[in-house]
Image (cartoon, rainbow, N blue to C red; front, side, top):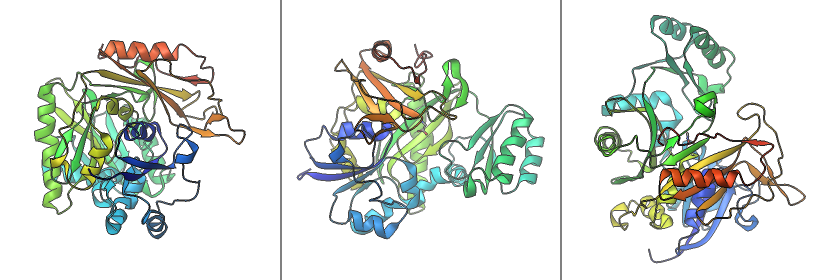
Length: 427
Ligand code: GLY
């Protein structure tokens, strides 16, 4: 890399704050702008609210043209809308896949068909477009079943049905009540997979890829995997469930066949291919879902283990030049993230919690903001369900997790709650 890069980062979660934290360490950074961002960023890094619309191609291109040398996309929505294609038209490298490839997350049916074409291990499924035939199919099947709204549903469109009443409820919400709008025009009904979950991120440049260390997310709201599903309450990395044997299978049975299938279709994949996996008792990985971006909260932990220049990596990936990237260096440390969420999340949650004095005391502990904003009086207050991510690096998983919890225990969290068992399974 010769010059310095003006970077636009899209997104507003803990994932984006963690991405920014890594990018800001690069000597190649000229300037970082973020949209919409959160109160973890400096005010001068935040673009004014309403100044970008990633659903409007013309406006978005006009806002970017001549202003940025690299666009890094955090969440899935801009990618599904086509931001990476629009940047390609302008000749601006973009870290994120095309709208075609983003359908891997944007349509569960698309993803399943592609997995079938590529011979990638996943659960059996059928796709339906109406209530009656989907219900009839479910009645023929053995429980549990997984019902997924086909399109994007902000992580809320999936129900694991253990009882038949849940099937009727879920199908009713999707087809009759239109809870997810057009994202529920189709449902994918899958057989339930048993095992332990892991999240693996493949960084792909259209030809080559590197795998980042595996992480494990904790999706349920409360300890012992109880309570409702959330966007993720914590994670740790590396996850021992992803042994060398499992990783080798992930490469040859999942990532490589998928990337080859997309190349065969003339649609090479660039950006992060996130494989959400179920690993069974024989160490065989099955794909639960693909996402077209980094996972959150896993990324907050995973990025801390990358010792290489992340901006350089993102730029080289975005210019299809991973081959010339210095070999990616991964730390031998362990990292963990615990999410502090507003009481009530993922349901109706407490709003505008004052986040004033929460500051890390150790160099290995970081705070990433998610649902926070600057209030009119200048204070930082919560503006979402997942509020902060507390991340620590340690020499062992236990060391990392102990540091994270010891930091959390050092301040009052009256209006916030968190899981107290992140990483316990691995320990
Ligand atoms: N950690 C789950 C997700 O990012 O979708």
